[in-house]
Length: 154
Picture 1 (cartoon, rainbow, N blue to C red):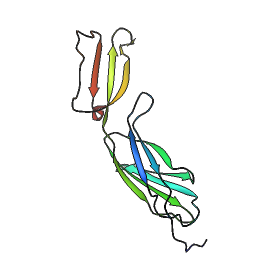
Picture 2 (picture 1 turned 30 degrees about the vertical axis):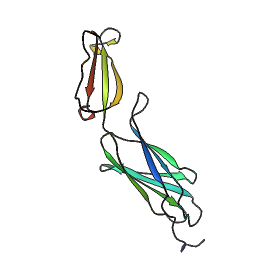
Picture 3 (picture 1 turned 45 degrees about the horizontal axis):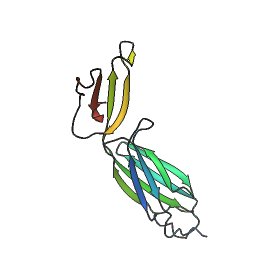
């Protein structure tokens, strides 16, 4: 193989899945890609470039890695670029992902979760829709109040 060999083609497929936050993690984007149709040599690694307008990152993976999970911020647009590397870096497969905006649900239980000078907040994630906040009907649950805040107010 010489340095005059052509670089690898872009990975044939670059796909994603948005993963909503839950109690164990924040929002994520799961990326998957395929090998290039024409490797033009032996693939030694893959390089992922990603980010939004204020934060750019780069990751390098082994030749057998074809997926990666990226922690993201809701409400932003991310650019993802993956390329195979032989003795030369290949062409990028590119993808733009609009991450949904998420908010946080805080529950305040005045009796069972008291702490010094306040209340313990239980945080749960949800996809932010139209309402800025909701308060449960006090007659149905007199001690539990739920506040739904858009993520921009956190």
